[in-house]
Length: 277
Image (cartoon, rainbow, N blue to C red; front, side, top):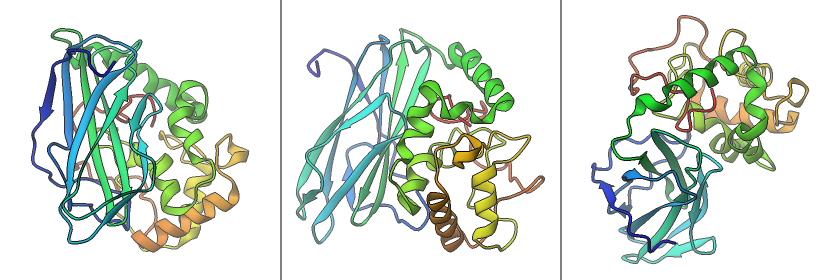
């Protein structure tokens, strides 16, 4: 399947500032030929293939401990983990994006959690010859309306594969990466989804606990507590609140605290999948 003659256009942008989970640096010493891969004019098929090629430029060995994608429809096919590369050693792995039933442009992220930090990569497929983003804007707007009317909708149906199921068994930073980063660290997040790095006031875990457990009325933020219909136990919420308070030293922003000067793509997307808050 990987041998199909698809035209692969490499996103040859330089490795710039990439938004990462708090408290982890960028794994800059894993040098990729390209951190963004794109295919244009492809069919909305079962698997659209991409391949990342990289080298360990660090002075010592680097271990890739875990790999996560921003959506269940995207699979990273890496060697058995943990995957350790000696200094100067190269590696490659493939990513498959399931685009069945999709239209327009589909973008997904791949996170490598390594012994020297987190590396974020991305894949993008522009479906159909000359497909434009406007084709799937109606779907995004419809999903936004659903999320506003019922914030817990992201924990059900196909949305659960991104916003609920990855939380199982995770705590602290791993939990943040599993279910928070998809919205709050997305470069395409909606304007009402706050950048958690811009804190309004100092605080403690109690602020985060309430925010995470109950969500926020009038926003896309659902309550993640089990009693609110969410996927997180009290212990998981406590671990996440402690992690955020320790690494950010602040509380979530309230009305008027949002800095709309953040870089976004201007289309008000909720996340890269266009399906969550």
